[in-house]
Image (cartoon, rainbow, N blue to C red):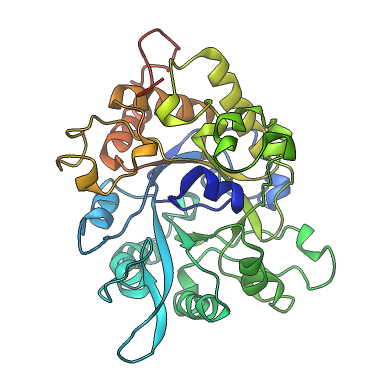
Length: 385
């Protein structure tokens, strides 16, 4: 995700995702709110559960296999790419790079070559032999680390080069309230999502003329109530936010999804999680139901579980050696898997984790009908009290 994590969400609820998708069958989808009444379930909120492969790009010339790992879990899949606006000190040329943040090396990849050209064979095969009921095959989530107008313009131009691959919707209009008119999605192999910043909405939606195509879709804004407090003190009190406060608005033509830190489900988040309980499950179900009834996809981040000396999944030793964030760690894969199962059963659209292979295997087990339910029981704990 957007590491910086719970507090960053509170400042601007945005998120990113890399995902393996599992059909769930018929659910309460809020299709009318999405303008999706005639869409296949795969395109609707609640229609399938997705592995969100978190931070799917190299960092500091390390972990260059992340995108390959995500794609190797199979399609449908989606990819998170964090974007920064970089100025080359030698040439003074500015351009968008894929990076979690400073310090920059100047060797960071760019969206066109790292993502779009890498997935070209997948998309071209899909377009040559179309099965639109399975689309989107790839969900690309763009996490803008800064919102310079030039940055937005550069990314918009890149998306324009690949517009024939992208899920779009017509701009409903430019007057007051026009965005409340939710237009149908024209579903293609790739769906692009972005964050909740108002600057992004201006660049990617409200500045467009009526009838133009929206190439990407933002998250709703979520502002925690004042009674919860500010800063780090918020973390332990996010569970006090009601589902109605957490999902205060329905989908609009541009804003079609929502995103939360896990601390909104379990008090204190991953590092303070205890036993997974029936009350936790009820809380999760209420949040998911509220989002889907509002016509929104919903995402939770980032559900990891590993020891300090290694983890199951990609064969790399250590947690710092993987570039993973300590605050996302439940302490064991067993504890994380309990939450993965619960999220799957609740119909969470995007389950974010750095342990791509572990969650992908669980999703495939469920697809085969062999998943053990997430019945709360003693001993299935988070990493710390």
